[in-house]
Amino acid sequence: MKVWLKGLLRWMLHFIKWAGMGLAVLLVFSGSVWVTMKVVMGRQEVEVPDLVGMKPTQAERSLGKLDLKLKVESYSQFSDTIEKGTVASQYPIVGSRLKRENTVRVVLSKGSQRLMVPSLLGGSVRRAQLEIGSMGLKLGRIYSVHSEEPMNSIIAQDPLPSMEEMPGAAINVLVSLGPRATDYIMPDLVGKPLERVREALETKGFRIGNIRSKYYPWAEEGVIIQQTPQAGFKVKSDAIINLWVSEGME
Image 1 (tube, rainbow, N blue to C red):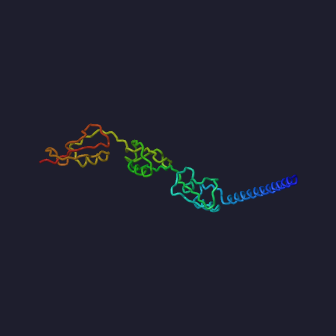
Image 2 (cartoon, rainbow, N blue to C red):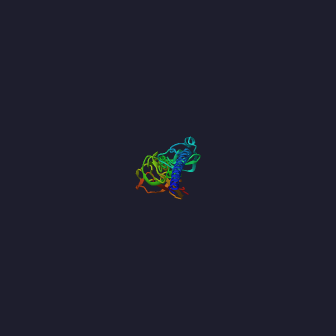
Image 3 (cartoon, rainbow, N blue to C red):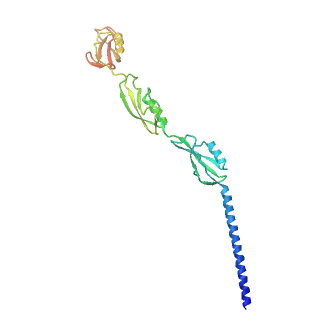
């Protein structure tokens, strides 16, 4: 009986010994497979580079070295810091792990959203409205002042030309009213020939308004018989003067 127990014990010890060795070999094999798979997988993945600021051709070359592909999105985005036509953003982001042959998507920059203010000087208000309206700007306040510049022309603006503004910004303008009119005392024109009076008035800057003719028995044809404003009134040099002229005596 003792011999039989000793044999059984010896067999169990051998079994445990070989089983332990087998388990150790299995663990080593499993570890090797895991490491091998990790190395293989690691070789299939690459780190996504930084493409921001690159032109599409440059970004494509950079990705090609890593067996990655480039896709440029159909839309773009504004950027005050990144040059127009270069990469403004990317996905996946820099430093991400990506399998080879996969694609990195990029969005190109539209450049700065700010608009350069054009020069409106010398033009009319209407022309200014059309020009800046087509750019995405708008006309702001309109101020007027007498000046030696032509009437209704823009002589100053705020913001100044070449300054940058956001879309929708308002441009204020200063418009010329022309030279300031001079005060005159209206002369007496009655009894004087129309043609001589017309030349003298226009030389002084007056404007002839209505010229009406009517029969007047005591004045020759073409002689002024009535006027407005009347003689002695204070008028501006740009005043409009209306005249009545004799049709002649019967």
